[in-house]
Length: 523
Figure (cartoon, rainbow, N blue to C red):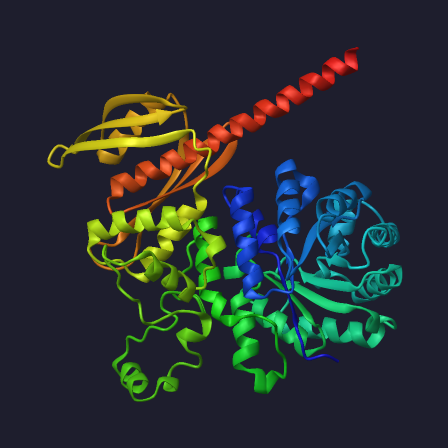
């Protein structure tokens, strides 16, 4: 049996399902390219039948990514498989991942069928998917709670039908490692054709055991682990990719297993996913948390100073976290910026150098010194910028009376070539600015969440504002970044306004198409 564990990343499918606001096609592509550089073997990038947007995202990624295999999810239904195959057809090689529930509670309560009927549906789906590709994966949803006899029958039948990968998910995070390991071991002992497929596992973290269950599974013969960056996903999340990669790397001598992950891309990819998904990483998170390589205890500090490995079993550099944050000033040239971006793992295709350098100079004039984390934050923001922004902030002036708690703001906004200036009052500078923008734009947005965080250290750190907003029964995520908190807040709102404007344009286009179809149907 091979000692190579296949890393199947589902950040853009299972992970994205858990987000308050959906990612744009551009944001999904940015994450996909980062995952490709990270070295994931397979990336599951969407559920194409679910929406036109998801279909477009899958197709765009499938057309672009070359070094990882792109996969799409489909229920055990022909229409789902058709959508997956069509969206993936632009790729050189791809995988269709089809699934159906197998546990008694799911079969009886959700599917309202007998197990034999479900087995027939699974076999039919695998055979149908094989018409489009020989790389078909089949998942037994809620396998962790499926009677072992039924699970063995389903796995054997799916392999016979042509599935090359069989996934055994602990869908609700119910099992403990000894129990899950026994399930995998039993399948290898009882399923006669199991040598014809790769056994995969997809563990959720409801009881905090997803990583432990996944490691136990590969110790019992599984050779694919399904995971997400930062462990994001439904409910308590999924198995964490970075934890799996570093466990298998750090404990290679004991486990005898390896992956194709480029560990030096871990920190950058984690930061990117956290930023674009608006999912902050907790400080004490293993591998990528802010405290992962921080030592507070005097005893620990003394030990690390004498020998780093006294309290560090891996180095920050091993995951791409550079301890030497080079400071830059407004005198730094473009070649320095390019070099620092390369040092942090970014290629020229990841950002617009002209826009980034302009933003860098503006920030350097304000702060005096710019650090790696500043540059990275600016790169994230520039990467999210769209060429067709409808609303653009031209000027912001705020006056606040801290003793009275009131403020006045004047904003000038350009929309479609026209400039509008409005003023308004509010309970504080941000409230006043938002009220002025509402007047100037006549854009009605319901802000449901506001979060301020510091990007960097010290009093000159960049302030990042993330806002969650509802508009026409959709949820949108806006981000603003500036040394001034009010300016960052306004940028975040403008970002959301442009997203809603584009959503309106898409809705208008759909309506026109429907009208044309109705007219043609009536002829």
